[in-house]
Structures are given as C-alpha cells and as structure tokens.
Image (tube, rainbow, N blue to C red):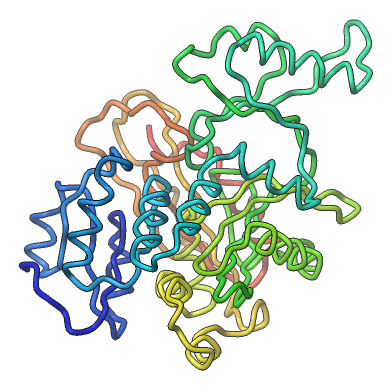
Length: 408
C-alpha cells in the first residue's frame, strides 16, 4: 500500500513482528510499520503501510526518518526489539518535543548506566564495573574473590561480563578462571563486569501509563533462555507485593512514564530482591504470546495503549484484567536448540504429543541442515507451547524435555 496521509494520528511500529502487526491491525487506529527492507514485498502483498528502514546510523539518519513519519501525521513510535529502543526514543522526543525521552531510551539501552541509576536510587544491585581491557577483567575477578575471603586453592566465585547494549544473553560470559578471560576477543570490549547474584532469576512485564503501574506480569524461568511460564507459580507469586514495590521503585527511579518495561531480578530465599537489568521492548521467550494465552488480552495491544499518552483511564481499566486470579491457567514455552551440528530429522516423542499440557510446536527442518552458531538465546529452532492448571506439573514437564534431543 502506498504512503497516504491519514486524518488521524498514526502509530509507528519500529521493527518487524507479525504478532505485533496482527495485534495493532485489530485496533481502531491507523499504523505504519518501519522495518527491514526485505519485508517490503510481504507488506505490499498484505496491504501493510510500510517504510523500509535499516536501523543503523541513528545520529545521522534520525531526522530523515522523523520527516517521513511527520509527513504521515505520526503520533508515537513503539519499539519492537532492542535495536529500535533508541530510535523510538529519539523519534518520540521529536514528535512530542521532549528531549528527555531520548535520554531515557539511552538509559534503557546501556547496562552500565542502568545499574548506576538503580544504585543511586537505593535499589539493590551486585558489584559492577566497566572493563576496557582484559587487565580490567583480571583485576575485577581477583578483587571480587579477595572480598569473599577465598583461601588458596579454593575455586573462585564467578563473575559475569556482558556487552552494554545487547539484548538478553548475547555476548554474556560467566568467568570463574583467569584463563577464560584470555578467550574473549578484543573486539567484544568494552564490557560490563558484575559479581554473581544467587537466587531465583525471573522477569517482570510491567505496563506503565502516566508513570503508574497498570498491569504486572511475573514470568517464572525454569532454565534461563530455554523455558518460562506465566503467571508464575504460587511459590514465586507469594512475593508479588515485594516485587510490585520494587517495580514501582524502579519506575520512579528511572522516571518512566509510558510503555512497557521488562526487568529481571534475583529473589533470595529471605525474599530480598536484587535488580539485574531492564529492557523497554517486547521480551523474548514468547512471553507476550504466553500472557495472551493465560489472560486473554493482547500484550502487544497493551504496549501500544500504554505508549500513547492520550489513552484514557477508562480504556486502561476496561482493557486489563485482574492479575493472577483472572488467568485461565499457566502458559509455558520451551525453546528448542539442536544438540547436533547437522540436522537430519525431527524427533518428537508421542508421549509429549499426547500430554494434556502440550498445545502446539513450531519446530521445523531448516532448508540448510547445518546448525547456525548460537548467539545468546536468539536463534532457537522452534518452540513447544504448554498450557495447564498446575504450575508444578508445568515445571516437571519443562525439566523433562529441556534437554531432550528433538533434532537428530
């Protein structure tokens, strides 16, 4: 479909996500998708208003994209994946004439900045520093373990290093021994270094409008990057009041007004919470799809509504259901990664297909049988979806199949 002037203000989705496009298409608002040029033909075929765009050169090209969006009478932009968060920040800053919006997007993209901002607000974080050389990492590993009073011959406690601006676990390394530091390519520096945090890791999906928390989902991880379900089990949900208080503290500390945040925390056995990091885009692990399966509302539509300052209180109250108690069950996903280098066939056990908690899978035999090198948790080869009433059975099923060889 060609670019046409819209009488009403339109919403721009930054990035490409069919579930997000399908969700906004069902809403009573015009929209445009700004995405990689290779999706132009698909957009034309399905009458999706589309601006082809490579999300590179932010500072050099933001004005160009802004002019295109302004000509379409664009009201807001909504980021779909990590690399579009800064673009949404700079474009919304221009569209709403508020430069601080862009600064917030930078804060939500830089793991070092967000840790420091959280620390300044009194939020619990681990020990962290920036590393610009491998010698910095050697010193940090040594200092952390000296602080823990390690004796000669005892194993080191691990530290974690990760890029400042990559999504999820891309580039994340856990380091225990000094020789592992020498394996890091110089091209990966600089990095953020962190002490290891003990406890149960989980994420939240917090929908924010006008600085207020409108809906809080807690996602339980069974194995990070592989398995998760929503809502969380009763053993984790019992900490919801404390978790909600921490999220509200985070929203205030980061001065977040609109949209969604996806923070990760570590829960200790005594209920204390340590902040891991926070993103401001659609989470991985099919979490938005799981929320819709469990609660019956589209989290993609919720993100659009909460990103729009003009969404009314009445619209928000009518849209969001009651947390936890309104869920029809627990919805889970298991991301499948091949344990082979060459894929010959798909191996799905009949026992899994007959299990009442199994709902579907989207595993496939790829055109290229050679398995791609893994980058974080971003290139799994399909997902198995579950749904059921009992969180313990969900946990047992996921633990059973997370190491199963579905690809031979």
